Image (tube, rainbow, N blue to C red):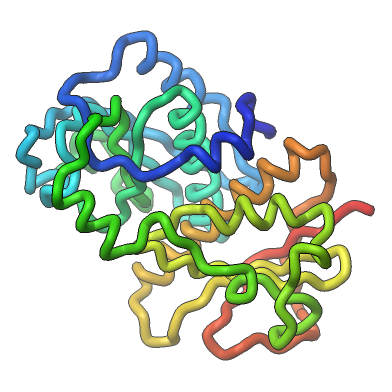
Length: 280
C-alpha cells in the first residue's frame, strides 16, 4: 500500500531524534498515530503488531528504560512479530513506514533495537511472549537543543553519512558498480534506499541489478550472533520500505520474489534475501 504522504520529501527530512520536549503527545497527534498504524501493511504477507505506551523518562534519562540514550520522551512505539519467514523484513518495512508518517507530522523518532530494556518495555506494551520483540522508538516533539551525549553519539556513529553508490549497488556482477545513469528510472528509489537508517549506521544492504531484476542482499560475517543477523534483516526491511514506497510514488510496477538460484556468485559475506522484479 502506498503511504498517503510525500515519500521522497519525507525520507530526505527524516533524522534520528534522541532529545525531546518533556511532554506527552497531544491527544489529536496520538490518535493520528494510532489510526495510521492500523492502516499499514507490507508486501511480504507477514503479520506485524504495533504497540504504544506512555511512560515518562526524565530529562536526565531513565537508565532502566533506555540506558540514558533518550531524554525527555513520554511516549514510545513498539513493533513485534509472530515467528515466520519474512517477518523481520515486514517489521522493518512497516515500522519505518510508521516512522515516516510521524516525520511527516513533525514528530521526532529514533529506532532502538538494542539500547532499551526489553523486559520493562515488553511488560509495558503487553508483548505476547510468543512474539519476537523487534524494536521501539520514542515519539514526541524534538527539543530545540541536543544533549552533548546525543551529539557525541551522532558523531561516533556518523549518523548523517551514508556509503556511496559504489559500495552498495552492483550491475550484473559484484565487480561492476551500478551507476546512476545505468540505473535510469530506478536511480531515485535506490538513492532513497541509500538514505535509510540502520543499526549503528552499518548499512548492511547490497543490491545487484540483473536486467529488470534487483536482488537484495545483507552483509555479515558467519560468526555473528543470531540476534545480530536478525537485526540486519530488519535493517533491510527498513531500506526496502524506502525503495518500495518511492517506486509506488513514481508509479513503477513490479513484485517481490524469492529466487531459488541466482547465477551470479556473491562474496562470501553477502547473504541473499529477496528480489524485486520490474514489470516492463
